[in-house]
Image (cartoon, rainbow, N blue to C red; front, side, top):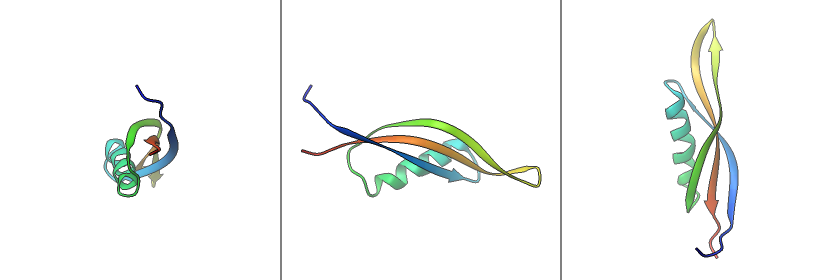
Amino acid sequence: MAESVYKVIELVGTSDTSWEKAAKNAVETAGKQLKNLRIAEINKLDMTVDGGKVVAYRARVALSFKYES
């Protein structure tokens, strides 16, 4: 395997229906601007609560992409 360099960034995706959609939203939105996405790791899940009801899901995602040489 050739030597490579990767950058890891942290994103927060949101959804009003699920954590999975929140994480997917973060990765797919980043993918519109960043090339060579490699690994997405969910670091934290939380919810926004209003009036005793869950109104939004949030996923904090560490996303890596490869630097091009």
